[in-house]
Image 1 (cartoon, rainbow, N blue to C red):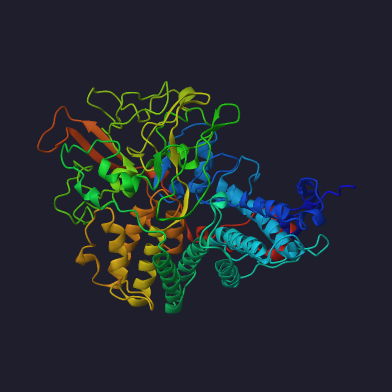
Image 2: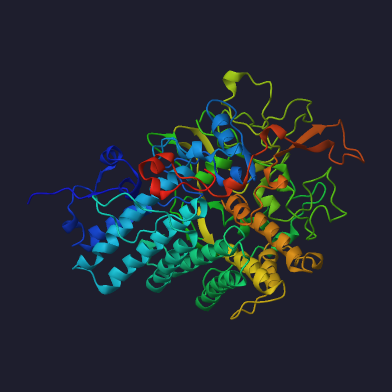
Length: 637
């Protein structure tokens, strides 16, 4: 039988690209014609599975490559440690607010940040999904149940692609049917609200069709709970000031309802219970405490294992609703390809020589958001001493942040710092420059050696003991979880929406939880006390503590940049500045300097970001507007 090639093309090439671009972007689907693909359930499933390869979350890799400008940098959580080559230019394009230049780079070829690649990849994924849905009824050898399970995934995927794009670019064109090749290229952009209606419709269909859980061989596919989590995330975004400009109570009520439904669903089915790490309040992290400089305090392990754990086989934590499949640490003939978060935050020695601005150091002004273990903001706790900033903090601090003096196995042979402890001092006890910190006197030809510059490293995604020798050799008996949805986010979503709709002590219909109680659930499970009453006296005051709690619980997980946008606070001075922690040895401990170091938080005015009103919504590539002027560029661009 003669094989006719079935081609599927990026939807955007038909919608917004020139004929020349179209001819360059046509792709084959394994040499099969459409009739063959959609008359066999196995081939139809494989075809739909292709859409997953285009689903790029904030934590995703593209072809095992990590991102250039992760959300943790864009949100002011951290700053990259690379100092040479093209990277400062790329970073500055963002810092200057020049998103259009970033969007106009050659996309989807491995040379652009993933947040740019996502725009192009999502349209490809939508094309695959729509092709599947248009032809699903042709699958003759599938049961109705099998077809519904596939359709449930398709609706989830389409809503996910649009959620990822519209949260940045605003309203686009919501296509539920692929365009014919000869259709005129005269589409106009729709409003965000129009796209929202369609996303919610797709999500509701996926909730109806997806299973509560999958058999072992299909673990990793979206479930009913994952679709409900997507609805909670989407409705919260739509209720926020960026979208909900009139501050409609109904939008907040809808978001509270979506979170309530998932919490009730989880409780009734025994799913997604928060990991109990309440014993973490026992860790000894006072002055010279036995756990203060411990790499991984034992009582904190249950919480830490949500993010990293021993063994290469992932054990899905009880509170994780949806995660990406395991990423390989090595591949491509021995070239290092670690999971995204490990590569972005590992110890500033393992990635030396890499060509992307990885190895993010935490910013001092972000680290200040961690409360003391007394449950108070550091500015409100009289026991807090800025000259001993690492002691008696929220237990999550000791999971997320690496600071000077922590015992830590260096991560590669030939490491810049192989001392066995973190050394981030500008002047250390030996009177020399800290071995983890970048020395400003480093010759230009050695600036590729990525080191720290912020005074803090990130612990959350680094398994202590991961060690690279060369090629694919080393000690990698660990896993890193790329969690896409977990129950902590849902409780935080509920608290925020319930506070706005019903106040701190109010609760949504069908829920027994108040906004305050939802926050306390998050805090108590790591041994933190209930939120202090001084922060709950009004909706406005409590709002700020909810936002702070969200920053701490979800730090370095890709949430904060879009949180700052949806709250319409990204332009504020506090969210544009970049502060480093500088530590200098004073000769010996004293009453003024209990550790012997002088700690100073120093603003880096040359690194300050430039975020204006137009940066709240991203542009689309100029080439698309040139091809189809009716589509319309994002306002301000």
